[in-house]
Length: 209
Image (cartoon, rainbow, N blue to C red; front, side, top):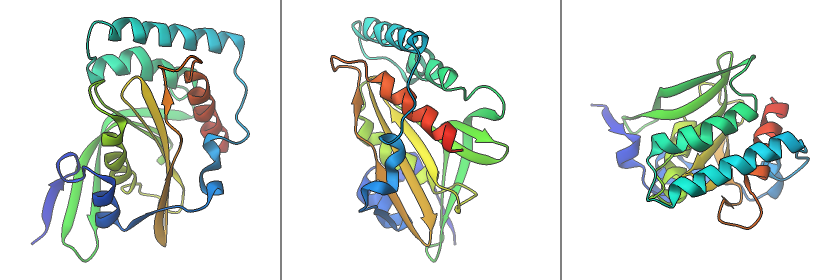
C-alpha cells in the first residue's frame, strides 16, 4: 500500500531529505557558480529600491516577528518584480501542488510550494518562505524536497529560501544521481545591503534561462 506523506511534516532536516530522495551535496564549487560568478550589475534605481525594501523590513520587524504573508508582501514580491519574474515570458504561481514519488519505497510525498516561477511549463525558480521566527535552515530540506518534484529532471532547478532577513539559494540537478548545493547566507543585518547580491543572483538565473 502506498503511503501519502506531507513534506512539511516528514522532511525536517537535510539528513532526512538526503536519505529519502537519495540526494548528495555537490563537491565541486563550479556546480553552483550562478550565485557568485558573472553577476549582473544593478542600476542606481534598483539599488535605491532595494534600500527601501530593507528599510521597510527592519522598521516592521522592530515591532515583533513577521508572518510569512507579511514577508512576502514587503520583501519577496518586490524582489521578484525587480527581477522581472512577473512579466513575459515568465508566469508566477503561488501554492502550487507538488508530488514526489520515491521509487521502491511505496511513498508519495505531497506539498504546496509557496511560490513558483515558470517559463511555459519549465520550472525556473522555487520560492520557500518562513516566518521571521524560523531559521532558514528549516526551509532548506523542504525546498529540496519540492525541487525533486520538478517534472523536467534533465534541467537544473533553482530555489530561494527566506525568512525575511536571511536568504539562501539552492541548486539541484536530478540526472542519474541527484545532487544539490547551497549558496552563502545573505543577511539584512549586515552593514551592506545584501539584497543587492540577492537580486543580482535572481537576474543571473533569469539570464541563464
